[in-house]
Image (cartoon, rainbow, N blue to C red):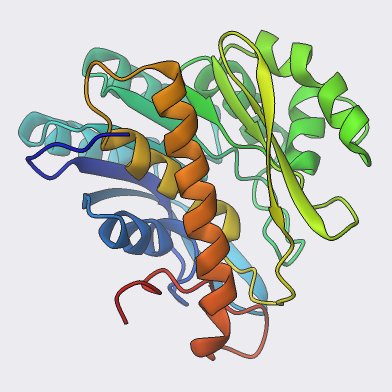
Length: 276
């Protein structure tokens, strides 16, 4: 994987997290930690902390559109990470703006359920993500429950059942998918990466920590950052290496999370483990 200047510019389109571990705040930290310039568009104001979600207040679609249009009028982006989207109107606004001025990479984290178990979107939001945003994305990063919702199948409980989802994930329309296996039992966290040509396993030892707040946000935004840093003539193998780099960065951020001591619930990962 190669890197070039100037510093890459990456956008997060996501909900807010006052505790700073997830959502656009966590994404901004991730982009910055990985050497990218962070920009943001807010989709929802979420009353939450490390213990759970109290309420979700969606930002109107026209306000999201205004944010996007003004940003894209000024800043040329290398990659976009899309997080929480609660309605079809919002999904269509995002798709319209990014189709008109598409960055090189679009990473979609189909956020539906928080780590606390709180449901963040309704059926309309689920259908909007599947029908409008997944076909727009280059990479999607569902966990096992999210993949099951997207494909309307039972949640996988084994690696064999994860592999059985590969054809369905490919049919959704995104050329790359990282199916996260953290919900499986065992000492390993096996993630299944589907590429335009095949699929392969990316695995790492499971970290013994309760500090899982914002883990999905951190991984998808790390993937956006590592892909943004690739050269224009990069290959599929370079992209696989970039995604693996993002997974390794998250692994170390989880290992270092005990140093933070934030909150009374599931604490955040340590985004700046390499800097502090």
